[in-house]
Length: 157
Image: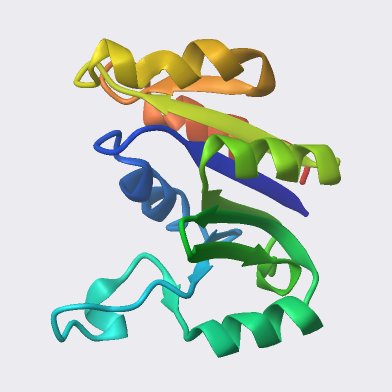
């Protein structure tokens, strides 16, 4: 089993990349659980991208399931759990800190930093600060998706 992490700033097409990789039958796109409240009458299904649960449900999971990584922003938690890993290749999108945490806990992790020419220079700070922590830097404007897919999906999990 292999864990593939994607990280990068907004508008770098991370979600598109994860969904495209998941078109391969051996790849599962894992979305985080979050206790972020839904606003504006949007349903869980319409919001997409996350598993929206209550704070009580999150507390329950955290007590009973093995945690892969958690990011907390103010009072909102975003969590990945070990039970979500179900395929030979598991792709998830997380922030830099969660990615480093996962890489420190597990052996078979392939980390990808996604960048774009559309990012402002101030947004690219993470690429330079954490470049040594990532296995591959993928530029959505210049690099070939098939090359990324081959690196991820055609090595032994």
